Length: 121
Image 1: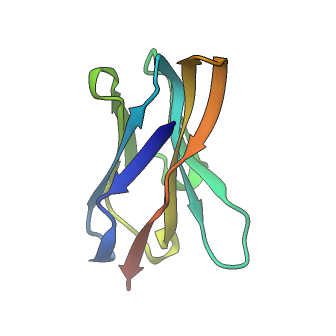
Image 2 (image 1 turned 90 degrees about the horizontal axis):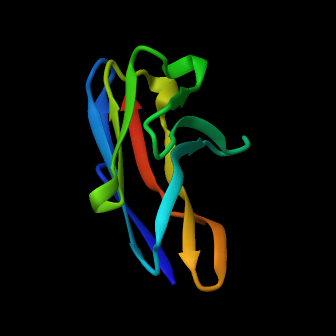
């Protein structure tokens, strides 16, 4: 089995910064794309940022220039550095990973349990 464990959420004032981490462990051969998604009550979960194994990145327009996603392949860990936070960034942040397993052979999506980020005005 594979587990994704997130950390780093919390309460911060507008303009502040937070760094989220997500470590994957278990039956992992390699990991393709890793990403962060955000969900607020009454809305669909939305992509915030994603990074491929070769470090190609993709960001939601609302976070471009403020958030930076990165990963450490040796540690199977993905990070999200969030700067100049705004109240509208508030939500539960979930990490996900496309994990390649040797048995059964294939790529499988996994999700973390979520970490709350609250930005006060």
